[in-house]
Length: 57
Image 1 (cartoon, one colour):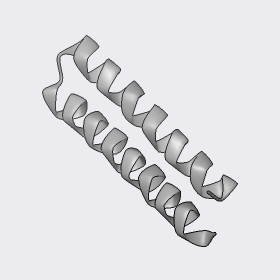
Image 2: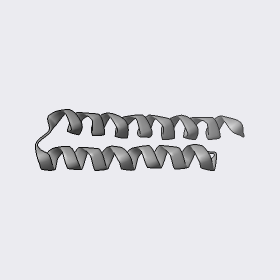
Image 3: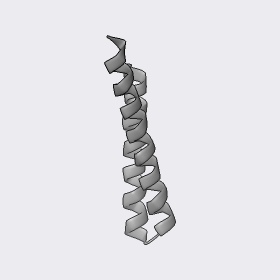
């Protein structure tokens, strides 16, 4: 996995987790859902890069 893409995926996951945590703390369901969506997007990006790595060799 390219380091740049890996870093982007991890950053997106961390931002999503933070947004979800803040949303829960303040009782904002919309923010909580956005955070979960960002985490899922980061997970998908990471999975895509792992698949690319498998087929590289």
